[in-house]
Length: 127
Image 1 (tube, one colour):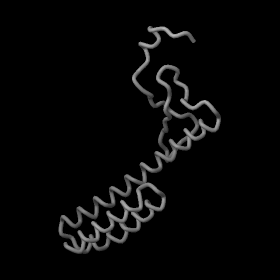
Image 2: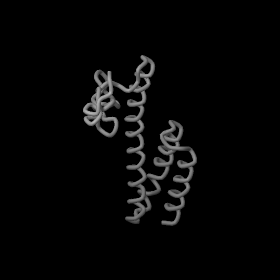
Image 3: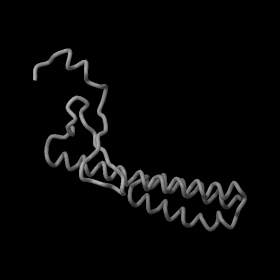
């Protein structure tokens, strides 16, 4: 395809997300990155296209797990802020177990999990 300034001017700044046909992750519509001017997956080989699909599914899965983890941490901190020692001591082991699971699945780094567990334990102990 010869280069023309008219076709170049119609291109957007970066890749856009388009629906990914045939794959439903946790009941949500998934997307994949496309080139802004052709609408095809940026990958060319069959294996690279498969990696695009796998990476997208993993991204959604990680997003779900990270959201669950953040909610658990917020719930524990809210219980401590409210002065509810029974609830905070009950939620601490659950939150720590969830942190360990997420570190094992590499959703978060193991050092980040250790640091968060330490801070939450100290927070509950001081309340």
